[in-house]
Length: 416
Image 1 (tube, rainbow, N blue to C red):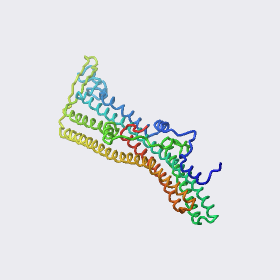
Image 2: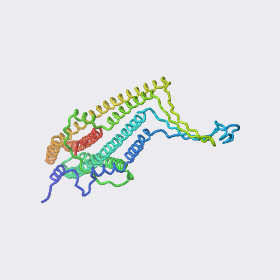
Image 3: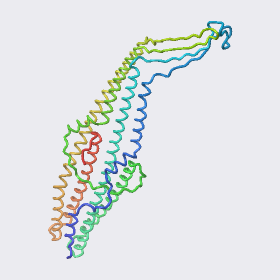
Image 4: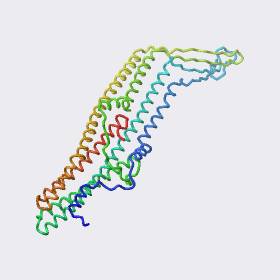
């Protein structure tokens, strides 16, 4: 059975977006590869490993000091007067500094908190890279979806052009109908070139995140789809406040600053030193020495300034946490509204606007065939369908990008 031109056009309007290729670029695989290979995560891990070595150093006693020397009588030659003069000797002394109890433990605790803060940087880097990969992935998927829309509508418009040329050849249509169709076809070709350029850009960005050469080929991503998003803003804010690495790090730094205050106050306490020595006296009996030294903390002005410095640092850490929390709340509000709005708009386009626009296009094409409407009406309806389809995928992309940022801030997967 021969299919007429407008039946073919109707089939094109109802056709799904793009054929399903055998191989697809799976998002979970891409994210896993980026987390394995991106240097930003390795840098954070190395910094954490370096910071983990500091607590052991801070809680260790200072190295002992060994002193060797002599006392001579009569001349400066070693051994002069040894055995005959009671002041002549050759000896060795060992000294060990001992900080006041608790000082080393506080210094070690401060270093441990700093290491904990670096550990949060690892999780922040992982979430940041994951979000960037998802955004590049969804942007790349959008270029394929829009490319399918352009290809399908280009085929539809090419069919309309042939119909208008046939009607013009028999005097049933004006020449401007043909010219308008040709112009619109040229515009679609320009849009295809723009989409191809955007696709190459997103491929390069995704390859960079995967630590691959920029020109490495990538399979087509999975098709964009609208996922359920039924979260409340207050719940997301509560989740982010509890789990966001940036806030976790700020909390750790508040604890570290509090320990810094305690350590500065502990400096009012004296430090000690234990000394022991042996002196060879020649034929005279050997001499032994033991000494216990106390470092008296008399410079109280300096210690008061150190305590004031740490108290200010503590207040700064608390203010940093409050500022980060408010900034995070503002970003959550913005991206939540973007995700919610894009989800609603995408649903509206898919379920209402696009079906109505396609119905109007089909009706105008049927009326154009009988001469009831002019070609401009058909072309206007065609442009509306094209615009709405592209806007639908724009909203889908905006939804997924906003959700990826929400996932980065909350530290929680929101869509699957």
